[in-house]
Image (cartoon, rainbow, N blue to C red; front, side, top):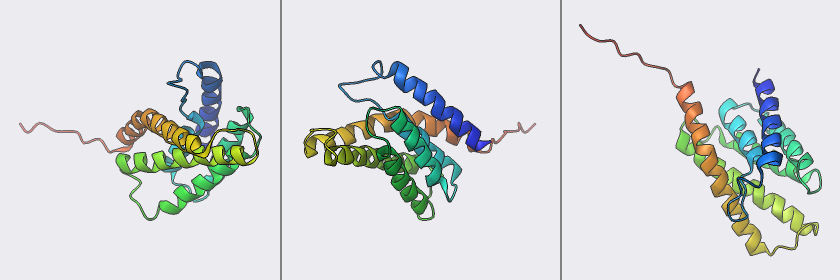
Amino acid sequence: MEIVFLILSVYAVAVLETALGGLIEVRHVVPDLMALVAVTWLLVTGRPRGFLAAAAVGLASDLTSAGPAGIGMAAFAVVGYGIVALRGKLDMGHPLVQLAVAWAAFAAITLGEGAAWRLTSETALAWPTLAVRAVAVANYTAAVSLPVLLVIDWRRRPRVKAMAAG
């Protein structure tokens, strides 16, 4: 069931990014919603081979972007593998830890893609500009991911029903 939800989420995000991309742009920065789906899925499910699903989301990101195919897939896979490796070392159940890991993942994905595009001459942006762009995209995407992570945490916590003593 989780994989069906992931596929539907990727499809919905692909439609949103192509239809609303210009509307959610702030000062030439757009949140990476595909990265949001992949990283959130990795943080919530905790699957040991979840980086393969992240790579598939990266491929979907490549197919909806103007850049060459494979760069996003590789960036998503490497970052996904890093998140899977960190799972045993950090308490990934806390939303603030999830937010910090998500921010680092968003920055790494954006910087990795930008560096690959720079090395393959797909972009002529200077290295400092790529770094600033990666931080800006990570900030914006993390801001968008915060309510998502909080709602997921709220839905997963056991509900305690207070009984009136009477």
